[in-house]
Length: 158
Image (cartoon, rainbow, N blue to C red; front, top):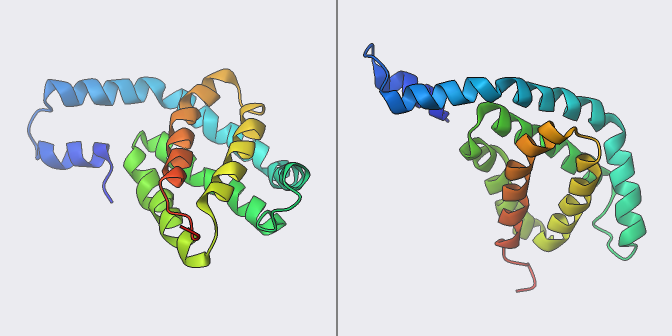
């Protein structure tokens, strides 16, 4: 999959960039330090986050067998896809690498997407408290898009 930046480069084909493309690239590079900082913060937070997420999920929802340690670890590791999308400033990357896969596999596994969404919302609370304000501001739109997509996935009982 090509990102918007690769598309711009390919379309230019040795010609000057259109003004709109220059503006988009300039805006991207101006926000690049914040995006890189987000990646550093997520990497630091990841170590204890899966354990903390599992503890919080089992405390809040003791009746949900879905909330295992491996699930918590998978959810935390999925933040890498969100981070990559944010770094590239391309939501299509998140959809292509994670959201569409998740929406496809959950019904096949018989897992209620809303339970996964609920788990992501707990993860959201935990990660928001570990990120600086500027990193959270950069991260939140992509994370929200991912969790919103899970609401549209049909439940296996429906």
